[in-house]
Image 1 (cartoon, helix red, strand yellow):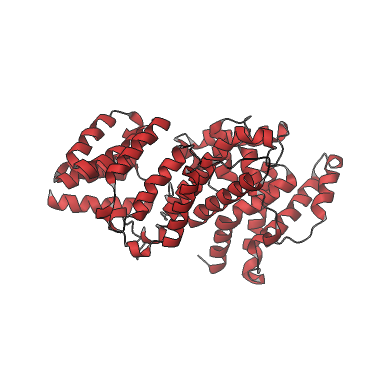
Image 2 (spheres, rainbow, N blue to C red; image 1 turned 45 degrees about the horizontal axis):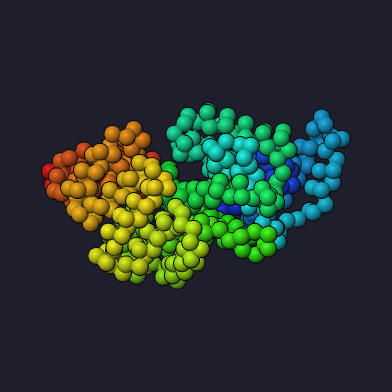
Length: 416
Protein backbone atom coordinates (compact mmCIF):
# COMPACT_ATOMS: atom_id res chain seq x y z
CA UNK A 1 0.00 0.00 0.00
CA UNK A 2 1.44 3.45 -0.92
CA UNK A 3 2.61 5.58 2.01
CA UNK A 4 -0.03 8.23 1.25
CA UNK A 5 -2.82 5.67 1.48
CA UNK A 6 -1.41 4.42 4.78
CA UNK A 7 -1.49 7.97 6.20
CA UNK A 8 -5.07 8.44 4.99
CA UNK A 9 -6.08 5.17 6.66
CA UNK A 10 -4.35 6.29 9.87
CA UNK A 11 -6.13 9.63 9.66
CA UNK A 12 -9.45 7.86 9.33
CA UNK A 13 -8.78 5.65 12.35
CA UNK A 14 -7.32 8.37 14.57
CA UNK A 15 -9.35 11.42 13.59
CA UNK A 16 -12.75 10.04 12.56
CA UNK A 17 -14.28 10.58 15.99
CA UNK A 18 -13.14 14.19 16.29
CA UNK A 19 -13.93 15.06 12.67
CA UNK A 20 -17.38 13.46 12.68
CA UNK A 21 -18.28 14.99 16.02
CA UNK A 22 -17.33 18.42 14.68
CA UNK A 23 -19.26 17.89 11.44
CA UNK A 24 -22.34 16.58 13.22
CA UNK A 25 -22.22 19.58 15.52
CA UNK A 26 -22.15 21.94 12.53
CA UNK A 27 -24.56 20.10 10.24
CA UNK A 28 -26.90 18.59 12.86
CA UNK A 29 -27.32 15.67 10.47
CA UNK A 30 -25.58 12.32 11.05
CA UNK A 31 -26.07 11.01 7.52
CA UNK A 32 -24.84 14.17 5.81
CA UNK A 33 -21.83 14.36 8.13
CA UNK A 34 -20.81 10.78 7.34
CA UNK A 35 -21.32 11.32 3.60
CA UNK A 36 -19.16 14.45 3.36
CA UNK A 37 -16.53 12.92 5.63
CA UNK A 38 -16.13 10.04 3.20
CA UNK A 39 -16.20 12.48 0.26
CA UNK A 40 -13.29 14.30 1.86
CA UNK A 41 -11.34 11.06 2.24
CA UNK A 42 -11.81 10.39 -1.48
CA UNK A 43 -10.45 13.86 -2.27
CA UNK A 44 -7.48 13.14 0.01
CA UNK A 45 -6.76 9.96 -1.95
CA UNK A 46 -6.78 11.99 -5.15
CA UNK A 47 -4.79 15.04 -4.03
CA UNK A 48 -2.35 14.06 -1.29
CA UNK A 49 -0.13 11.86 -3.52
CA UNK A 50 0.62 14.93 -5.71
CA UNK A 51 0.10 17.87 -3.31
CA UNK A 52 1.78 16.22 -0.34
CA UNK A 53 0.48 15.39 3.13
CA UNK A 54 -0.97 18.47 4.88
CA UNK A 55 0.57 19.61 8.16
CA UNK A 56 -2.67 18.80 10.03
CA UNK A 57 -4.46 15.97 8.19
CA UNK A 58 -7.48 15.98 10.50
CA UNK A 59 -8.05 19.71 10.02
CA UNK A 60 -7.67 19.33 6.25
CA UNK A 61 -10.28 16.55 6.18
CA UNK A 62 -12.65 18.65 8.30
CA UNK A 63 -12.32 21.75 6.13
CA UNK A 64 -12.75 19.74 2.92
CA UNK A 65 -15.81 17.98 4.34
CA UNK A 66 -17.36 21.35 5.29
CA UNK A 67 -16.94 22.53 1.71
CA UNK A 68 -18.51 19.33 0.41
CA UNK A 69 -21.45 19.91 2.77
CA UNK A 70 -21.86 23.45 1.45
CA UNK A 71 -21.97 22.13 -2.12
CA UNK A 72 -24.57 19.54 -1.22
CA UNK A 73 -26.74 22.03 0.66
CA UNK A 74 -26.67 24.49 -2.23
CA UNK A 75 -27.90 21.77 -4.57
CA UNK A 76 -30.66 20.69 -2.18
CA UNK A 77 -34.28 21.35 -3.12
CA UNK A 78 -35.01 23.04 0.21
CA UNK A 79 -32.22 25.55 -0.41
CA UNK A 80 -34.02 28.44 1.28
CA UNK A 81 -34.44 26.52 4.52
CA UNK A 82 -30.70 25.88 4.60
CA UNK A 83 -29.61 29.52 4.35
CA UNK A 84 -28.80 29.94 8.06
CA UNK A 85 -26.85 26.70 8.16
CA UNK A 86 -24.94 27.71 5.04
CA UNK A 87 -24.09 31.04 6.65
CA UNK A 88 -22.73 29.25 9.71
CA UNK A 89 -20.70 26.83 7.58
CA UNK A 90 -19.16 29.45 5.33
CA UNK A 91 -18.01 31.71 8.16
CA UNK A 92 -14.92 29.70 9.21
CA UNK A 93 -12.79 28.69 6.21
CA UNK A 94 -10.04 26.78 7.95
CA UNK A 95 -10.19 24.44 10.90
CA UNK A 96 -7.59 24.01 13.63
CA UNK A 97 -8.27 20.65 15.29
CA UNK A 98 -6.40 21.78 18.42
CA UNK A 99 -8.77 24.72 18.91
CA UNK A 100 -12.03 22.87 18.35
CA UNK A 101 -14.11 22.79 21.56
CA UNK A 102 -14.64 19.22 22.62
CA UNK A 103 -17.63 17.96 20.65
CA UNK A 104 -17.21 14.26 21.31
CA UNK A 105 -18.72 14.33 24.79
CA UNK A 106 -21.72 16.14 23.34
CA UNK A 107 -21.99 13.45 20.67
CA UNK A 108 -22.01 10.69 23.30
CA UNK A 109 -24.79 12.38 25.26
CA UNK A 110 -26.75 12.85 22.04
CA UNK A 111 -26.35 9.19 21.09
CA UNK A 112 -27.31 8.17 24.62
CA UNK A 113 -30.62 10.04 24.61
CA UNK A 114 -33.31 7.97 26.40
CA UNK A 115 -35.53 8.20 23.30
CA UNK A 116 -33.18 5.63 21.71
CA UNK A 117 -32.98 2.00 22.76
CA UNK A 118 -29.87 1.00 24.75
CA UNK A 119 -28.65 -1.11 21.82
CA UNK A 120 -29.06 1.81 19.43
CA UNK A 121 -27.25 4.14 21.83
CA UNK A 122 -24.17 1.94 21.97
CA UNK A 123 -24.20 1.02 18.28
CA UNK A 124 -24.57 4.62 17.10
CA UNK A 125 -21.74 5.81 19.34
CA UNK A 126 -19.41 3.04 18.18
CA UNK A 127 -20.24 3.90 14.57
CA UNK A 128 -19.89 7.67 14.72
CA UNK A 129 -17.36 8.25 17.48
CA UNK A 130 -15.10 5.22 16.98
CA UNK A 131 -15.43 4.78 13.24
CA UNK A 132 -16.26 1.09 13.57
CA UNK A 133 -17.66 -0.51 10.44
CA UNK A 134 -21.24 -1.71 10.54
CA UNK A 135 -20.05 -5.30 10.14
CA UNK A 136 -17.88 -5.08 13.27
CA UNK A 137 -20.74 -3.61 15.30
CA UNK A 138 -23.12 -6.28 14.03
CA UNK A 139 -20.62 -8.93 15.09
CA UNK A 140 -20.37 -7.42 18.58
CA UNK A 141 -24.18 -7.53 18.92
CA UNK A 142 -24.46 -10.98 17.27
CA UNK A 143 -26.95 -9.76 14.66
CA UNK A 144 -26.85 -9.80 10.83
CA UNK A 145 -25.18 -6.84 9.13
CA UNK A 146 -28.39 -5.65 7.38
CA UNK A 147 -30.20 -5.64 10.73
CA UNK A 148 -27.53 -3.47 12.32
CA UNK A 149 -27.43 -1.15 9.31
CA UNK A 150 -31.19 -0.59 9.64
CA UNK A 151 -30.86 0.10 13.39
CA UNK A 152 -28.18 2.71 12.76
CA UNK A 153 -30.20 4.47 10.07
CA UNK A 154 -33.34 4.49 12.23
CA UNK A 155 -31.40 5.89 15.21
CA UNK A 156 -29.83 8.66 13.15
CA UNK A 157 -33.16 9.65 11.63
CA UNK A 158 -34.89 9.59 15.01
CA UNK A 159 -32.36 12.06 16.39
CA UNK A 160 -32.93 14.33 13.39
CA UNK A 161 -36.73 14.06 13.24
CA UNK A 162 -37.23 14.38 17.00
CA UNK A 163 -34.93 17.39 17.17
CA UNK A 164 -32.80 15.80 19.89
CA UNK A 165 -30.34 18.56 20.85
CA UNK A 166 -26.63 18.10 20.32
CA UNK A 167 -25.33 19.07 23.77
CA UNK A 168 -24.29 17.94 27.21
CA UNK A 169 -27.73 17.91 28.85
CA UNK A 170 -28.71 20.28 31.66
CA UNK A 171 -28.26 19.14 35.25
CA UNK A 172 -31.80 17.87 35.69
CA UNK A 173 -31.44 15.57 32.64
CA UNK A 174 -27.82 14.46 33.04
CA UNK A 175 -28.39 11.74 35.64
CA UNK A 176 -30.78 9.74 33.46
CA UNK A 177 -28.11 9.43 30.76
CA UNK A 178 -24.99 9.03 32.88
CA UNK A 179 -25.15 5.23 33.16
CA UNK A 180 -25.52 4.90 29.39
CA UNK A 181 -22.61 7.28 28.81
CA UNK A 182 -20.38 5.29 31.16
CA UNK A 183 -21.38 2.08 29.37
CA UNK A 184 -20.50 3.54 25.99
CA UNK A 185 -17.10 4.81 27.18
CA UNK A 186 -16.44 1.37 28.69
CA UNK A 187 -17.32 -0.36 25.39
CA UNK A 188 -15.12 2.02 23.42
CA UNK A 189 -12.21 1.06 25.66
CA UNK A 190 -13.01 -2.64 25.38
CA UNK A 191 -13.03 -2.49 21.60
CA UNK A 192 -9.65 -0.80 21.71
CA UNK A 193 -8.20 -3.13 24.35
CA UNK A 194 -9.25 -6.34 22.59
CA UNK A 195 -10.42 -5.59 19.06
CA UNK A 196 -13.37 -7.77 18.09
CA UNK A 197 -11.86 -8.49 14.68
CA UNK A 198 -8.99 -7.59 12.39
CA UNK A 199 -5.22 -7.87 12.28
CA UNK A 200 -4.43 -6.05 15.53
CA UNK A 201 -5.29 -7.05 19.08
CA UNK A 202 -5.12 -3.47 20.37
CA UNK A 203 -6.55 -0.27 18.87
CA UNK A 204 -4.66 2.21 21.01
CA UNK A 205 -6.48 5.24 19.60
CA UNK A 206 -9.77 3.89 20.99
CA UNK A 207 -8.23 3.20 24.41
CA UNK A 208 -6.83 6.72 24.58
CA UNK A 209 -10.12 8.20 23.36
CA UNK A 210 -12.08 6.39 26.08
CA UNK A 211 -9.64 7.48 28.80
CA UNK A 212 -9.73 11.07 27.55
CA UNK A 213 -13.53 11.14 27.49
CA UNK A 214 -13.68 9.71 31.02
CA UNK A 215 -11.33 12.44 32.24
CA UNK A 216 -13.50 15.14 30.62
CA UNK A 217 -16.65 13.63 32.09
CA UNK A 218 -15.18 13.49 35.59
CA UNK A 219 -13.92 17.05 35.28
CA UNK A 220 -17.43 18.13 34.28
CA UNK A 221 -18.98 16.34 37.25
CA UNK A 222 -16.36 17.66 39.66
CA UNK A 223 -16.08 21.30 38.63
CA UNK A 224 -19.69 22.15 37.83
CA UNK A 225 -21.16 23.45 41.12
CA UNK A 226 -24.58 22.09 40.19
CA UNK A 227 -23.24 18.52 39.83
CA UNK A 228 -21.71 15.93 42.14
CA UNK A 229 -18.74 13.68 41.73
CA UNK A 230 -19.73 10.19 40.70
CA UNK A 231 -17.91 7.23 42.25
CA UNK A 232 -18.60 4.97 39.27
CA UNK A 233 -17.31 7.56 36.80
CA UNK A 234 -14.05 7.69 38.77
CA UNK A 235 -14.08 3.89 39.01
CA UNK A 236 -14.35 3.56 35.24
CA UNK A 237 -11.42 5.93 34.69
CA UNK A 238 -9.36 3.96 37.22
CA UNK A 239 -10.27 0.67 35.56
CA UNK A 240 -9.15 1.87 32.13
CA UNK A 241 -5.90 3.37 33.40
CA UNK A 242 -5.03 0.17 35.25
CA UNK A 243 -5.65 -2.03 32.22
CA UNK A 244 -3.96 0.33 29.78
CA UNK A 245 -0.94 0.52 32.09
CA UNK A 246 -0.13 -3.09 31.13
CA UNK A 247 -0.42 -2.46 27.39
CA UNK A 248 3.30 -2.49 26.53
CA UNK A 249 3.69 -6.05 27.82
CA UNK A 250 0.60 -7.59 26.17
CA UNK A 251 2.24 -8.21 22.79
CA UNK A 252 5.59 -9.75 21.95
CA UNK A 253 8.19 -8.49 19.43
CA UNK A 254 6.28 -10.06 16.53
CA UNK A 255 2.90 -8.86 17.71
CA UNK A 256 2.00 -12.15 19.39
CA UNK A 257 -0.36 -12.25 22.37
CA UNK A 258 1.29 -12.65 25.78
CA UNK A 259 -0.94 -13.72 28.67
CA UNK A 260 -0.90 -11.82 31.95
CA UNK A 261 1.08 -14.44 33.87
CA UNK A 262 3.80 -14.47 31.18
CA UNK A 263 4.18 -10.71 30.75
CA UNK A 264 7.39 -8.82 31.49
CA UNK A 265 6.14 -6.66 34.32
CA UNK A 266 9.06 -4.26 34.03
CA UNK A 267 7.32 -3.02 30.87
CA UNK A 268 4.20 -2.01 32.78
CA UNK A 269 3.60 1.72 33.12
CA UNK A 270 3.89 2.02 36.89
CA UNK A 271 3.05 5.73 36.91
CA UNK A 272 -0.24 5.07 35.13
CA UNK A 273 -1.03 2.08 37.34
CA UNK A 274 -0.35 4.16 40.45
CA UNK A 275 -2.60 6.91 39.10
CA UNK A 276 -5.35 4.34 38.54
CA UNK A 277 -4.99 3.06 42.11
CA UNK A 278 -5.12 6.61 43.51
CA UNK A 279 -8.28 7.38 41.50
CA UNK A 280 -9.84 4.11 42.66
CA UNK A 281 -9.16 5.05 46.29
CA UNK A 282 -10.84 8.41 45.65
CA UNK A 283 -13.88 6.60 44.24
CA UNK A 284 -14.09 4.05 47.06
CA UNK A 285 -13.87 6.83 49.66
CA UNK A 286 -17.33 7.98 48.57
CA UNK A 287 -18.81 4.73 49.93
CA UNK A 288 -20.88 4.03 46.82
CA UNK A 289 -19.48 0.74 45.55
CA UNK A 290 -20.44 -0.25 42.03
CA UNK A 291 -19.35 -2.59 39.23
CA UNK A 292 -16.72 -0.32 37.68
CA UNK A 293 -15.05 0.18 41.04
CA UNK A 294 -15.08 -3.56 41.69
CA UNK A 295 -13.51 -4.28 38.30
CA UNK A 296 -10.94 -1.59 38.97
CA UNK A 297 -10.15 -3.22 42.33
CA UNK A 298 -9.54 -6.51 40.52
CA UNK A 299 -7.25 -4.77 38.02
CA UNK A 300 -5.44 -3.06 40.92
CA UNK A 301 -4.69 -6.42 42.55
CA UNK A 302 -3.10 -7.57 39.30
CA UNK A 303 -1.23 -4.28 38.95
CA UNK A 304 0.18 -4.41 42.48
CA UNK A 305 1.57 -7.94 42.07
CA UNK A 306 5.23 -7.69 41.11
CA UNK A 307 5.26 -11.38 40.11
CA UNK A 308 2.45 -13.76 39.09
CA UNK A 309 2.94 -15.71 42.33
CA UNK A 310 2.12 -12.58 44.37
CA UNK A 311 -1.33 -12.22 42.80
CA UNK A 312 -4.07 -12.43 45.44
CA UNK A 313 -6.38 -14.77 43.53
CA UNK A 314 -8.54 -15.48 46.57
CA UNK A 315 -9.36 -11.78 46.89
CA UNK A 316 -9.96 -11.57 43.14
CA UNK A 317 -12.41 -14.48 43.33
CA UNK A 318 -14.21 -12.74 46.20
CA UNK A 319 -14.45 -9.52 44.18
CA UNK A 320 -15.92 -11.41 41.23
CA UNK A 321 -18.57 -12.83 43.56
CA UNK A 322 -19.40 -9.27 44.59
CA UNK A 323 -19.44 -8.15 40.97
CA UNK A 324 -21.86 -10.97 40.13
CA UNK A 325 -24.38 -9.41 42.52
CA UNK A 326 -24.38 -6.30 40.36
CA UNK A 327 -24.12 -8.09 37.02
CA UNK A 328 -25.25 -11.73 37.25
CA UNK A 329 -24.00 -12.55 33.76
CA UNK A 330 -22.37 -15.77 32.53
CA UNK A 331 -19.20 -13.88 31.59
CA UNK A 332 -18.73 -12.63 35.17
CA UNK A 333 -19.37 -16.17 36.42
CA UNK A 334 -16.74 -17.41 33.97
CA UNK A 335 -14.14 -14.98 35.31
CA UNK A 336 -14.99 -15.98 38.86
CA UNK A 337 -14.52 -19.66 37.99
CA UNK A 338 -11.09 -18.95 36.52
CA UNK A 339 -10.08 -17.02 39.66
CA UNK A 340 -11.24 -19.93 41.84
CA UNK A 341 -9.20 -22.30 39.67
CA UNK A 342 -6.09 -20.20 40.27
CA UNK A 343 -6.71 -20.51 44.01
CA UNK A 344 -8.07 -24.04 44.42
CA UNK A 345 -6.67 -25.78 41.35
CA UNK A 346 -7.78 -26.54 37.77
CA UNK A 347 -10.11 -29.41 38.73
CA UNK A 348 -12.22 -27.13 40.89
CA UNK A 349 -12.31 -24.57 38.10
CA UNK A 350 -13.32 -27.17 35.52
CA UNK A 351 -16.18 -28.31 37.73
CA UNK A 352 -17.50 -24.76 37.80
CA UNK A 353 -17.01 -24.33 34.04
CA UNK A 354 -18.90 -27.52 33.24
CA UNK A 355 -21.97 -26.10 34.99
CA UNK A 356 -21.59 -22.80 33.15
CA UNK A 357 -21.20 -24.56 29.82
CA UNK A 358 -24.91 -25.22 29.67
CA UNK A 359 -25.47 -21.53 29.02
CA UNK A 360 -26.04 -20.83 25.32
CA UNK A 361 -24.18 -17.49 25.47
CA UNK A 362 -21.01 -19.16 26.69
CA UNK A 363 -21.31 -21.96 24.16
CA UNK A 364 -20.70 -19.35 21.46
CA UNK A 365 -18.14 -17.33 23.47
CA UNK A 366 -14.59 -18.14 22.45
CA UNK A 367 -13.07 -17.09 25.78
CA UNK A 368 -15.16 -19.70 27.62
CA UNK A 369 -13.68 -22.47 25.48
CA UNK A 370 -10.19 -20.92 25.71
CA UNK A 371 -10.45 -20.81 29.53
CA UNK A 372 -11.68 -24.39 29.66
CA UNK A 373 -8.85 -25.47 27.33
CA UNK A 374 -6.28 -23.77 29.55
CA UNK A 375 -7.54 -25.49 32.69
CA UNK A 376 -7.60 -28.84 30.90
CA UNK A 377 -4.00 -28.20 29.82
CA UNK A 378 -2.99 -27.34 33.36
CA UNK A 379 -4.68 -30.53 34.59
CA UNK A 380 -2.67 -32.59 32.06
CA UNK A 381 -5.67 -33.62 29.91
CA UNK A 382 -4.13 -32.61 26.62
CA UNK A 383 -6.51 -34.41 24.23
CA UNK A 384 -9.54 -32.71 25.76
CA UNK A 385 -7.62 -29.42 25.85
CA UNK A 386 -6.93 -29.71 22.13
CA UNK A 387 -10.64 -30.18 21.43
CA UNK A 388 -11.50 -27.08 23.48
CA UNK A 389 -8.79 -24.99 21.82
CA UNK A 390 -10.14 -26.01 18.41
CA UNK A 391 -13.62 -24.80 19.35
CA UNK A 392 -12.25 -21.49 20.65
CA UNK A 393 -10.21 -21.06 17.47
CA UNK A 394 -13.29 -21.54 15.30
CA UNK A 395 -15.18 -18.85 17.23
CA UNK A 396 -12.39 -16.23 17.25
CA UNK A 397 -12.34 -13.39 14.72
CA UNK A 398 -9.26 -11.48 15.88
CA UNK A 399 -6.16 -12.70 14.06
CA UNK A 400 -3.78 -12.14 16.99
CA UNK A 401 -5.98 -14.24 19.27
CA UNK A 402 -6.28 -16.85 16.53
CA UNK A 403 -2.51 -17.11 16.26
CA UNK A 404 -2.20 -17.56 20.03
CA UNK A 405 -4.89 -20.27 20.15
CA UNK A 406 -3.33 -22.02 17.17
CA UNK A 407 0.02 -22.05 18.96
CA UNK A 408 -1.55 -23.48 22.13
CA UNK A 409 -3.43 -26.07 20.08
CA UNK A 410 -0.21 -27.29 18.46
CA UNK A 411 1.47 -27.50 21.87
CA UNK A 412 -1.20 -29.71 23.45
CA UNK A 413 -1.53 -31.84 20.31
CA UNK A 414 2.16 -32.58 20.55
CA UNK A 415 1.65 -33.82 24.11
CA UNK A 416 -1.49 -35.88 23.37
